[in-house]
Amino acid sequence: MRYEQVREIFNKCSGNQMRDVFIDEIETDDLDKYIERYLTGGTVLSQKSVSGTGTIIYDLEIDGLKQRIAFTLAD
Image 1: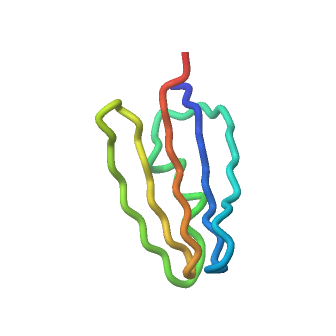
Image 2: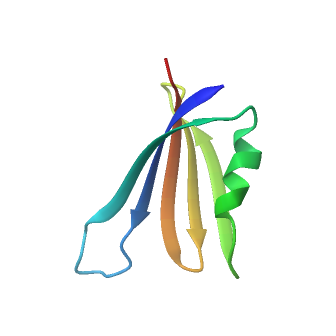
């Protein structure tokens, strides 16, 4: 399946509310397996949820750096 991926990396500096945002189109049959590429580090926390609109969201914290990766089906 083809998905639009939006990856947000939250800034660790408390005075800076900006975040890096990357948008890409990917193709995979297994999002859980695909997301494993991001799960590298000493301390890894991961939570998966599905929004009311069907967007699949992974909230990650890797060595203290918070990220959110959201997938929606591409047309």
